[in-house]
Length: 135
Image (cartoon, rainbow, N blue to C red; front, side):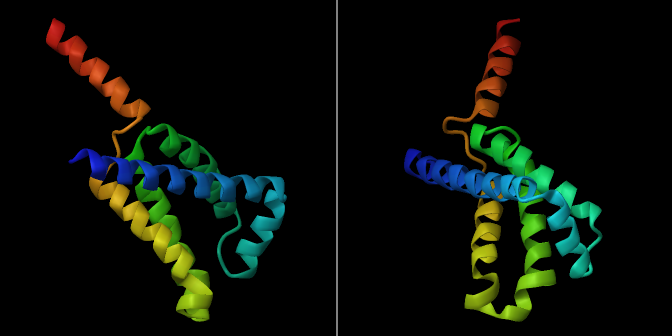
């Protein structure tokens, strides 16, 4: 992957992480019970609010740091697919799912391409490879 592409992937990774981290923090600071109640009001089991909130917070931090980028992006993509089909689709494109669709496409990009630039995961795995070679 060229350096220009890697810069683009880095920027997408950071934005994806910040957006999900912010949304996850909001779920907890706004009262996770409110999110549980909202999930239940639209027919989604309330306990999923905790799972989604934790994925958003922990995953947001992980993806910003560049740890398990592809796995976290897969989880973010699943959350976006769920949001689109359970909540946003009926509101239409512009007033409904456009934002979620953008996040889904960024997550798909991260799943397919990863992001090694300024990635803690890449640093760790490079170190392991170097240690293997030195043996």
